[in-house]
Image 1 (cartoon, helix red, strand yellow):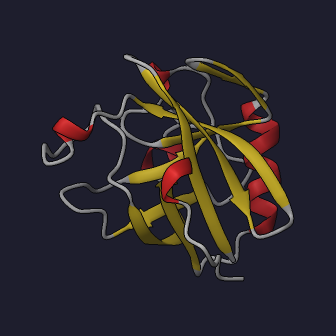
Image 2 (cartoon, rainbow, N blue to C red):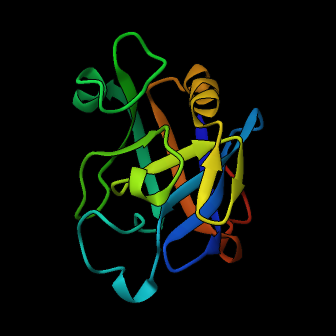
Amino acid sequence: MFLRLVRWCFSDSSTNGDLSVGDSLTLCALENAYDEKLESIQGAGKAIPFGTYRVALTVSERAKAGKLWTPDPDHRLPLLLDVPGRSGIRIHAGNIPANTEGCILVGKSWTVGSIYDSRVALTALMKLLTGDDTITVCRVRDLPKEIPT
């Protein structure tokens, strides 16, 4: 399955966008603030770099320990692979930038800096993932002319 995260609302504390899963589902997304000047700085606390990444469904130790919620009884969550200078980047439930720890949060509705109904959104997303997925992260102005299906 091909996922596309289009960032379109940049504030000092967060980044809002839309996460599309093929033609089947569109969710709200929330990440930490993004600053092009900080793109080269590595580590948590900022949005992931623009690019295309593989997504695997793997067991999350944080979900296993009860620190992250997952609808999966085996404690799996989507994990972005090969993000430059980063590791452990997941898509998970949460509502505000403090919940991201550098990851991507999903929800059903939004305001600047917040998303809502995150568990409902994550459940819907998990039903569509195959475990061998791809995500492209871009801005509205950088949308590719052709989107893989």
